[in-house]
Image (tube, rainbow, N blue to C red; front, side, top):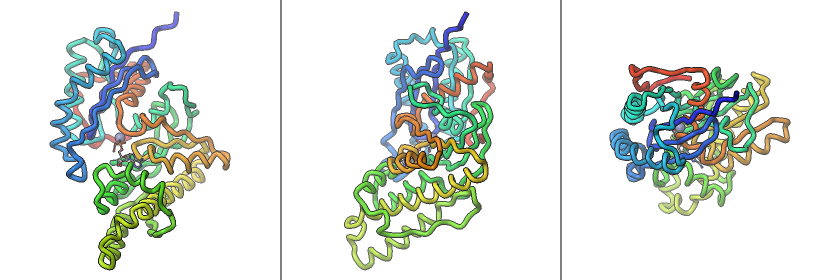
Length: 338
Ligand code: KG4
Ligand code: ZN
C-alpha cells in the first residue's frame, strides 16, 4: 500500500522575510511571505527591527498559510524550520515558534539549513524540470555566494565561495551608493534593461579559480562615481541605466567565469542557480543561453528564488522520509554550514 505524502508546515525567518508554507510531499499547497518594509529607509536590514517584525508576523503568516491550503493544524505531520545560517534574533523567532508548535501538537521537528534549502528548491514538484544528480549549483543570495556540487538531497559539497561580500550584497551596496533604496538588486535589474552594459568597464577581482570577491567592485564604483560627480553633480541620475547595466554585467561576468571554472574542474554540465540573485533577469537569460554549449540548466521558479518557506518545506519532506528529526534541545545556529 502506498503511504499518503506527509503534510509539512515549514517556517522561514532567517533574515527579513517571515514565511510559512504547507507542503504535501514535495508539492507546495500554500506559500505565504511577509516582507518587512521597515528596513527600506536604512539602506539594509536592521537586525533588531527584523526580529521584532518576525514576532509580529509569524502567527498571522502561519494562520494564512493554513487557511490558503485549507488544512487544519491537526492534519500536519511535521514542522520544518530554518535553523541557520542567518541573523540570530530572526532565526530565534522561527525556531521558538517551531519548537512550541511541535510540542503542542506532538509532531516531529525538522531542522533545515537555509542554504541547502535554496538549492533544494529545485526539487519542488511544480511541473518544472528537476535536475539529475550530481548537479552544480551557483547559490547567490544577500549573505552567500557559493558553488556547490549537489550529489543527492542529503549530500552536497561547497567547492567555492566568496572571500568577502556576497553577490547580492554587491548589488545592494552599489545601489546604496547610487542612492537607491534597499534591496537594490531588483532595481539594478530593472534599470539595467534600459542601459548599455559596456558603458563603464569595472575591474574583475584576482582571486582563486573558484573563489569570489565583490568588495573591490563596490570600492571601484564608489571612487568612479565620486570622480564623475565632481565634474557633473547630476552624473548618477543622468547615467543611472548605463551604470546599472555596467555593474550588473561585471557581476554576471564574474559569476559565469567561476561557473566555467567549476564545470572544467568537476566535469559536471548540469548547472542550477539558486538564492535571491537568481531572480535577476539577465542572469536567467544568460544561463538559458548556455544550453547551446551542451549544458543542462535549471532556473528556479521566480517565487522560489528569494527567501520563502516552500524551499524549507521540501527539505523537510526529504528529511521526513529519513526520519531525520531533532528534539526540543535544538537551538538556532547563525553560522550553520552546508
Ligand atoms: O536569498 P535572499 O532572498 O535572502 C538571503 O538569504 O540573503 O536574497 C536577497 C538578495 C538581495 O541582495 C537582493 O538584492 C537580491 O537577492 N536580489 C536580486 C534580485 N532580486 C533579489 N539581485 C539582483 N537582481 C534581482 N532581480
Ligand atoms: Zn536566502
